[in-house]
Length: 337
Image (tube, rainbow, N blue to C red):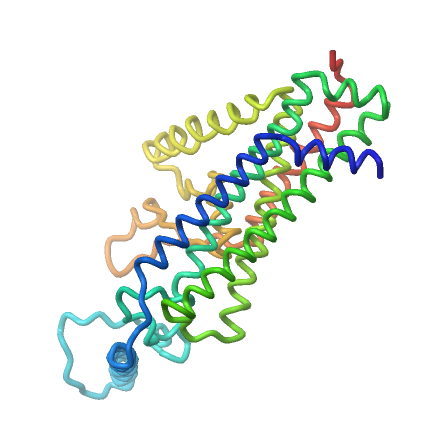
C-alpha cells in the first residue's frame, strides 16, 4: 500500500498531468459556452412545424415501401421512372429502420441532446485517449530518463512489482479522471438542453447506446494509456512513444495506404489500425473496396464490407498485450543505469 500511495502522489503531482487536466477543463468550458450561446429553447410553433416535417418524412418512407411491395406483387402504380427501388423491399420498411425521423431532427438553432450527445461524447473520448497516451508515456518515461526508477528500486528491489504498480496506478488514475470528466460533461450538456435547448426523445434504447459508446470509449482510453506506458518503457523516454506513434501514422497510415491503393490491394482498410479503433468505438464501420467490382460489367455490385467491434477488440487487445509483455520482459533484464 505504501508503494501504491507513493505512486499516486507522484503521478498527481506531475505538472504535465495537471496541465492536461486544465486543458481538458478549458476545452470543456469553451464547448459548453459555445453551445449555450448558439442555442435557444424552441417555441411551440417551432416544435409543431418540426413534428409536421417528421410525420411527412415517415409518411414518405411508408409510401416508398408500399410502392416497392406493389412492384413485387406485379401491381401497377404511378411512380417516378428515376426512382430507385432496391431488390429487397425490407431495406425500405420503416419498421426495420434503426431510427425513424423525429421532431428534433428538424429544429434549427436548437441544441438537441439526443442528436448531439454522441458526437460530443466522441470528442471527449478522443481527448481522453490523447490524455491517457501522453500521461502514460510521460509518467514512466520521465522516471526512467531521470533515474527515479533506480531510486525507487533501492527502496523496493522488485522490478516487476514496481513496474506493475506504476502501470496499475496509471490505469486507476486515468480511469478515475475519465469517468468523472465524462459524467460531468454529459450532465452539463443535459442541463443546457433543459434550460436553453431541447432534450429530445430519450428512452432506454438511447441511454443503452450512449452507455455502450461510453464504455467502449473508456476501454480505448485505458488501452491507449497502456500502449504509451509500454512504448516509453521500452524506449526509456517519453519521446520514444511520441516518435513511434508519429512514425506509424506517417509511414503506414498515410504512406502505406497510398502504396496499397497504387497496388490495388483488396480491402486495404483491414490493414490499418485506425480502422479497428473506429470499429471498436462505433461498434461497426463500413468500408468500400474499389477492387471488388472490377470484374462486374452488368448489374449492381456492392463493394462494401463491414468491420465490427469483436475483431476490432481482439486486434487492440493483442497489440496492447504484446507491447505490455515486451515492456515488462525488457524491463526485467535491462540495465537501468
